[in-house]
Length: 180
Length: 102
Image (cartoon, rainbow over all chains, first blue to last red; front, side, top):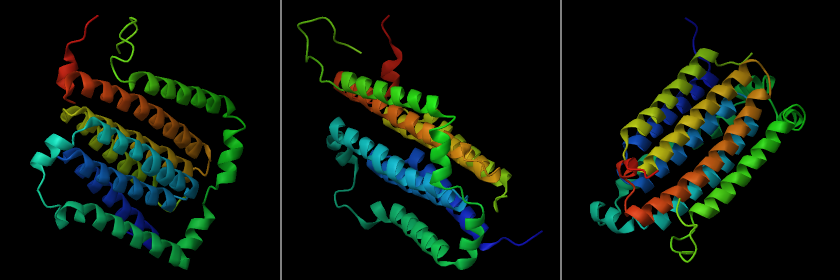
């Protein structure tokens, strides 16, 4: 049984944090708290990506998933107007322990990231098998060009469907085109 | 060759996928179902990135980018449907959607 290298320790720790945060997501009671844990879970997975030698994917995970998609969730929760019935169950004073869980996991991930970037041993191992953004871009706009075009159609369809469904009901009751 | 064995990456991906799947099955709040779907898509991304890094191919990251696009479109449509549901039923309970007309 060989001993684990520091890089492997970092990976397993990040994987454990991702699993714990994902479990907290599906067992949560308050949707905003679950969303906070989901952000932390995605950040932990981003650290895993970085340690697997995919820094470009890790950056995309943070920017697009944690940055854009989850902000969409937050906006939607604000539009649901759940504030009334959720604050009834929530403690009156926003106590320390509401945000202690996600912040502890986030601080652990930050410490991991700082350690990984600072340690020359891990960096040596990482740079030997990293796949950089240039290779991904050359592949994306070469053999996968058709897939990129289809993905753009998918995004356009998402945009139109989002616009159509999120329109307030009764907006055009005089014609018959309402509904789902 | 990657430092982390492929088996462990796939174990992580399947654990995350199962967590998301259990969330989809168990929760009745539609918002939680969408969040669990995100966890599941993310697990698939882990599997793709892991395989790509083990075989030193950039295809895994290309697939991850396509999954990212899919997740963005899915969330946009899903949340818009949830807004409709909230205005019609004043609730996000998935059981209210069991009676479909047509």
